[in-house]
Image 1 (cartoon, helix red, strand yellow):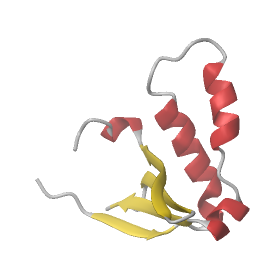
Image 2: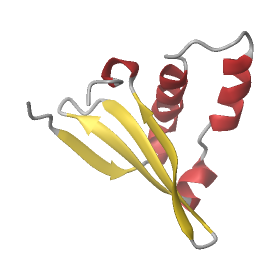
Image 3: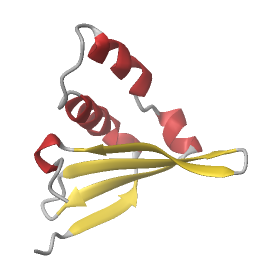
Image 4: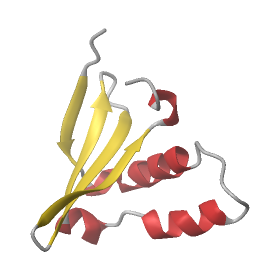
Length: 93
């Protein structure tokens, strides 16, 4: 099965959709009461984050945001800092 996607640098105008995706993806799992609200406050992406990290939007064939990915450079290491997927696609490869 082939899935068409476009991967492009994350755009500032996409921040509301990116943060909504993060909330939906993080909310896919069961968490103790109050945890999700506290966690989301730490995971919010802002303009400064986009300007200082390699960040990407993954769009499906309808141009809907289906994933957000960000890479951070820490000292001499490159790490996956964010990887969020729409709940409908979690576990589907």
